[in-house]
Amino acid sequence: MTSRINGRTRLAGVIGHPLNHTLSPAMHNAAYETLDLDWVYIPLHLADETDLMRFLGAARVLPFVGFNVTMPFKQSMLSMCDEVAMLAQLAGAVNTVHCVDGRFIGYNTDGRGLIESLAAETGFVPEGRSVAIIGAGGAAGAALIALILGKASKVSIVNRSLDKAEELVERVISHARSTELRSVELSAAEESVTTADLIINATPLGMKDGDPSPVPGEWFSATQVACDMIYGPNTTPFVESARAAGATAVDGLGMLVHQGAISIDIWSESAQVRAPREVMHEAALARLRAGRPEGGGK
Ligand code: NAP
Image (cartoon, rainbow, N blue to C red; front, top):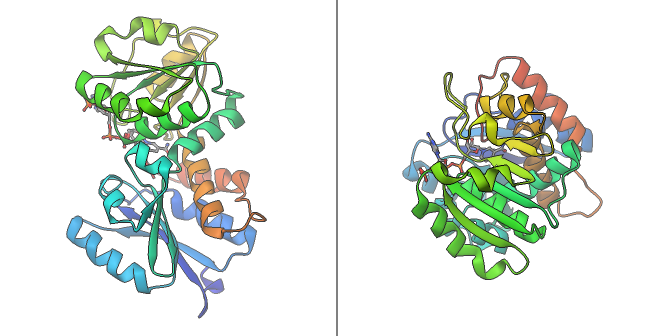
């Protein structure tokens, strides 16, 4: 890949920390090679907001086509873009920046990535379906917006802190014309979860050894689809207990791949280019198997 780098090569990358085990360079660079794009994708470790400001100054003059944003800068990037797409504004987070003539255009591809991956891996389409999202942070917000746009009939935001769930619902409720929204405390979520067609884990519970599933296994059933946003070499307790109940359960690798693919579609600005999802999935999986510990995010 490095043999391709020349005087016209454009830059892309992911900013955040920690990035030691990021799968994004592997899957992006594999896609650029397949598409014959003269781009290179690198991890850009930024320790804090001071680093972030310095990086943004540099990115305005360097040949960046764009960059992805991961923890802990997804929220703060919202106010640092020159323009923010409606979807990212509603989600309350930017995970993709397109650099255009020294300006930053912010997007959020997490929600669309989730919906695309669910359709590809499980056949789930949100229209008319009932969903329970466990968690009320940035990833839950992105999923919620995508489900509203996908015309889900009902979405319950189930969270440990009820006030966060209520805030999220409040922020998007005026856009939810065909979707009924509810905020529910995690400890009182049995009805919301057992009656949902799709259950999403958008909490970090399951990343560490010994973490339990955020919801009891008895709440899953065979007709449901379950999606853990976490991915890793090991199956999470959430996915394990959903599968034990006969549900169709997937981890977050597909979401990671599809959100990255949509970033490439945005950066390439050409209707002719569609990032090769299969190639990216293979590259991410190979990197994961080569030794990335369990985790989530980019
Ligand atoms: P976040 O903004 O920090 O939100 C975390 C949410 O999880 C909050 O609602 C928090 O509840 C809840 N939570 C945290 N610890 C908990 C616990 N011990 N028990 C119950 N609830 C708990 O994080 P995020 O950015 O939304 O990310 C959430 C997860 O999605 C992470 O694991 C991340 O890696 C993953 N993710 C994956 C992808 C992908 O492409 N696969 C993309 C984005 C994110 P409180 O409000 O009560 O604190």
